[in-house]
Length: 177
Image 1 (cartoon, one colour):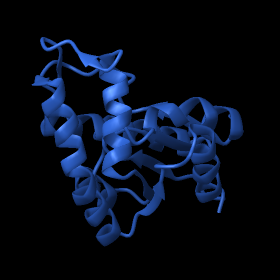
Image 2 (image 1 turned 30 degrees about the vertical axis):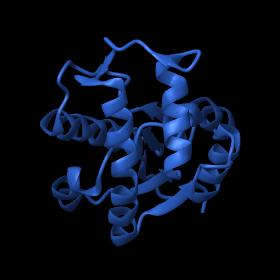
Image 3 (image 1 turned 180 degrees about the vertical axis):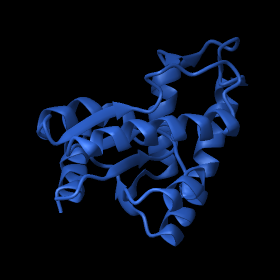
């Protein structure tokens, strides 16, 4: 099987980070390198320009791995338009797998992540936004990202009623085809 670069994407709360340890357990390390998009660090005020430059770096890392016969799976928020230009320049195939969930699930997961006993620290900010605003922006953007992903032909996994292990198994099935 020819090596590829896979981006496992989706809004915050769909389970991208939660599947990483399971993917690392399920996939052979000599054929797959599983990475977290944010592992190199996220600067304050990270924006579209930062994300595009980071995508470019991940494509370089994935290309180097492909030369050794290894596919790279990068879990993090990415959109197809973030790498379309680079994709045309390289023959290495890039595939997006969208992790998706319903609004109720996204909200519940993010509230659980950013609150203590269901209460927010009102001073807490996430990427420069108050926590409630951050959560609602992810809930709002989820159906938009789903629509864009369908139009781009991405494979989609609904994580609403799945454990991270079950999601990882579905990702493994997609990358093993």
